[in-house]
Image (cartoon, rainbow, N blue to C red; front, side):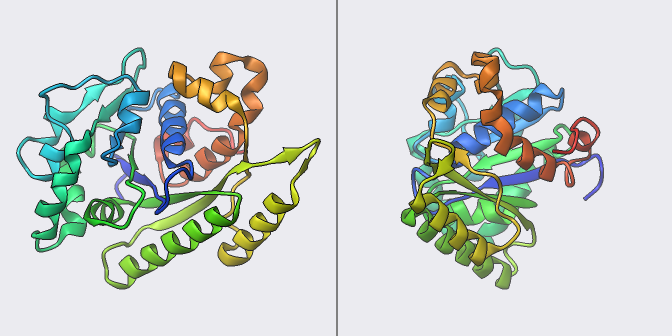
Length: 271
């Protein structure tokens, strides 16, 4: 892609509770803090990312209107309160109605990518938080993505989610609906006792690595600090400087993203 074009990243999981919204949130905050214009897209009708970022939209355009071509992408972009360089295309529960529009589209996997074209030069990174199921909204998000990260809990459910999500990506690739790259699997809620991972977490991570290979990222350990950060719209290190180590897995993901986003590459010191 041209250096002046945004990279579109996707946080993707076919099961709920895997950490995809937290991943989009953390990367959005971190990239915008580097001074890089960043656009987050809430692609989930549950609108968790919209609520976390404190963006209020009532009777205003959202992702639904963008997808169904009832407004331009520019009219559905809102600044995130108290955050420089961070913007959001919000969603609400009405986003489920986009399903009917996408289902009747000749090539639904390319609809969102087409809608984003007018703002591709305005941002360094565009990151999409996808819905946690296989549907047409997810397919158009996959079709728009240049790079994908798959969050997955470090338990049996997470391994199952990872397997299903990977299979969907491969299905889309085989159907020419996805030509991007998987840049990492981000294990979530890896439980630690003392200084060591529990047996279940260690076993699950080993199976993930066997299934995917070297794309496994460092684990996001279970901690109440993440929820506090979400509640206050901040990073863990902004709440407590001593908690900066909790951001390490996201820093590794940021370093991987820097290979695809020139603006990040010039700012990030490799991890």
